[in-house]
Image 1 (tube, rainbow, N blue to C red):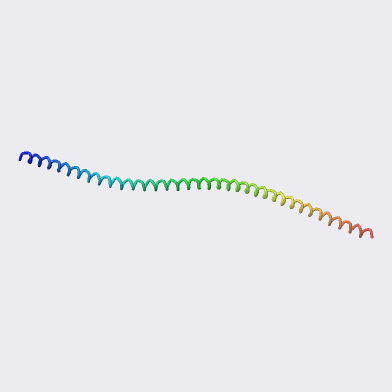
Image 2: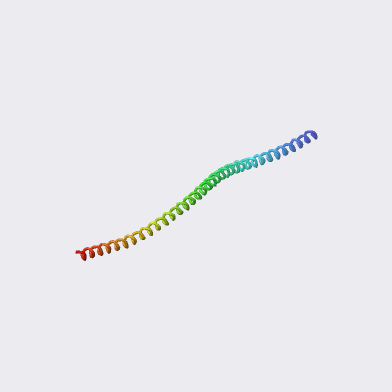
Length: 127
């Protein structure tokens, strides 16, 4: 009886240990499920961060290229402005020269008209 009672106590104690171990195992499995879910979420977030980083790098490269193009356009614009200013200056000089030539032409025409008048008067006086 005593041995049987001791065996029952030992079996009961072992059953309690097994139940505690099963509870611990179940709790650990639940924690592991939670950790796996968090791991998947973090992995997804890391993938999203990687995608955003790649997109950022693409946009940064595009920005650098556009900045370079803008700089080239500004240089071309400045060169065009300089050519335009040069053409304006040449045009102004040409207009000034034309006005001077027109003035000289008008003076020569007046002299020619005067010479014709003088010639006509001289011709009339010689008749």
